[in-house]
Image (cartoon, rainbow, N blue to C red):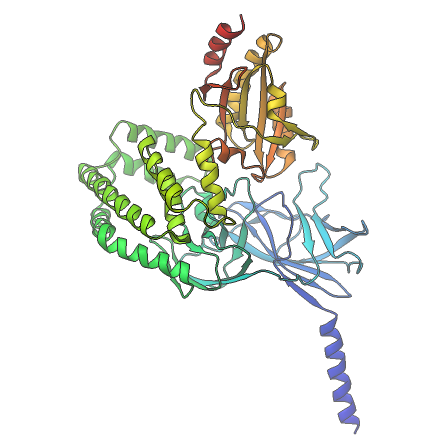
Length: 535
């Protein structure tokens, strides 16, 4: 009898302990100040809060977590101390291995039950420590129409320790994305959403190095299975209807147009007949150095070699010419499919045609296909929003009219562009703290602004950012004297409205009536135009 009672008692204790522990996967709901730190799991009990995650960086680069790290309760304002770390030494420079990551866990004091959400803060006196906002400590209620299961493997590539998942067209420089860890060569993620739209997945390490091969699929009920390779296209399998049809179309057109071209290219690669000896030498220099400045200089030399027509062999140039002819045939074949299949897949392929577009004639054809076959359909689909913005952006041209918008300043006060520039010649300056050419252009305009600001000229800047502090620091450093607004996480789609969705920025000089006079002008060109208009 005692044995039975003891067994029942232990079982009860085990049930009680389990009930008191919650495990929340992907707990981070808010913004973070760094991409180097990711929390993938929170374990919450009456005795502790444990955050499990990874630190990421290039091999041989170091990362560090401060022992002063705390959690701050969102409801109570209480501060919870870090007790211990596992897998990483606090206040120590931890150098990254070839996998680009280091897994760890942080144990904090138990959190007041009223604090259902906490912020992570390193509490470094200089104010430049890592911060991660809105870490959820309760199991999240899922109330979405779509459950898309994504799972796969990585084939022999240790650097693929982290994958980036996002709606296609997302710019990770300014918009949030989902970080998926790869454990023992495997990954999985349950995507819950309300809309069928294209997503893309690729390796974070490839993105960091500026060259990646995205895997595209639709967010829809069903499973997506992926095998990722470092040197070839991913393998994708799916039982979900939209993705299945997209894969079928790609396979069909691959056989019709591209497989033979790929084989020819692979043959040239095997024989080392793509790059010239001079270009190969520069490529070897890039592979040797880890210094970013040196890499930039080498890439500049490679671009110059390409401009001079000396980067590629004659055999490869012949293949490139053949590729252009085949691409033209494929484009027409694709357009016929889009016309005949006004579905979400067709809309996706139409959007892809825009991204590959080269001239005005193509734009007119694409616009006609959309208006005759797709306008009025798929009203709640993000691709429809994209098409509407793209059509509107076609008016951003010399002689066209600027597009009005409202955006907040650094203090959160909203400003409407038309009111700020009414009755003045104005330079609309779209820029970003992370865009070096944008900032150099903006700085060059300061003397022009000072010379003409009392004569009927103004400048309105808008910074494209993930966090307001980056914009504030850039303005303080560069000393822009005009009104600067902020576009956080592309909330207002301003860059898309102006047809520069993939760019850091752009400048547009408009007259008092709002007509666009100059696009991407130099300071000298703006000055010459103002001399005529305001003297």
